[in-house]
Length: 484
Ligand code: NAD
Image (cartoon, rainbow, N blue to C red):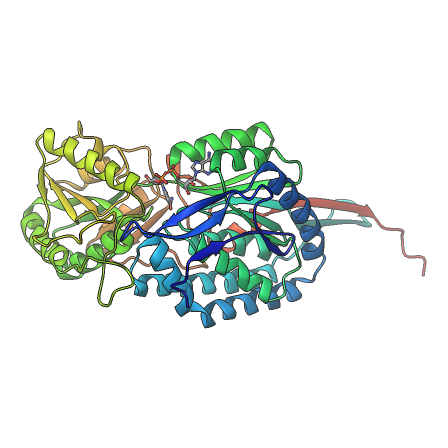
């Protein structure tokens, strides 16, 4: 059933609908290049209706109690779990990732929605003791309003779940501009909210021309906050549009994650976990480890172990049994990766791929290891966002930290060492929004998820993410003196 031709509509005021002018865009399977569906392409008429519907949806949603909002969000999370198999298949077809990874993503998204629903119940107001008798100072956290959320194709559901969860948990309504490359699984996510009983307009979904939609929605008076996940250049552009309108933003942008592997690390565990993290979703992950900094004495051993993991990857269509790495999302990404690798090779790098044939056709790109890099290579400056790891060696931790902090990015960083002092030292000194030591346990709902420097600002996890969708209001009132 989920292998049908996909027909994705806009969600406006609680109703699924085609674009007012009937325009559509095709959806492709990146593993075959085949057209597998179509999506409605919103025009300004549709966007105006979406904004109007969201304003009404916000009134209906914010006036529910936090408990009632939680009940709907928990129901939505459970529906998502119930429908996981069929939604995972849709995601795998349109995005290319292996089914097991799609299922894990959906399960994670359900956990995020549930968490933010619960956290919304703890958005407590505060009474601040006054300096003057009979004055009561109440500090209130109130939902900021309608949020415009722009999300990318690498985690079609989880990227939306983080934005929807935090916004809805705080009592905001959301207009989602989901990725045109992977539109059908996001539509299924929005459907679970409708089926869970969310008021019409509290969640809306549009697709079309990303630049046209962001320009329109960011300037629209109904929209009070912008949340974006994607590349740093687009993030900076959207932040400047939002700045001109004095609207707050959450920006989750690119990364170029360093990994420091010390000589005392458990190298088997490091190679296994790092390979899993590197090649998950064919490396199209903002927190994927990319610059591998290996202590010189263990570098050859680690590289051998890592290559063995690369050789064990089974590359193919995400929906096929046993596949562990699918294609890239589109041919634009294949070309971008090819250019980075060619530039590295031309500048003297050693480029290694496992000896496995890639499937014919589609947007496949081999797992790639770049050795002997130097700083003149583009790949040492630009986020590859693909199944590509770069290996260099270090002899002092000071040099490793310097290299880790060299780039303007600061999203995730990884450290492998058994030494507790080194763990603490690197945890402090590496400039990143998230540092994981000896494992990859970042991304769970209750902890911060976000970057610094060019990787953005704000967080998409933990109570801070919810609070970023509220404004603070002081109500200070003088009470009449008791006359009894
Ligand atoms: P891109 O910058 O063209 O697009 C990234 C995302 O932003 C897409 O979903 C796209 O629809 C959206 N977008 C682009 N222009 C927009 C605009 N003016 N207004 C609103 N949305 C807009 O990049 P791409 O080629 O699709 O992806 C490659 C790069 O994107 C990667 O190098 C990576 O840095 C970044 N990316 C990051 C994440 C992440 O999780 N942080 C996810 C996907 C892509």
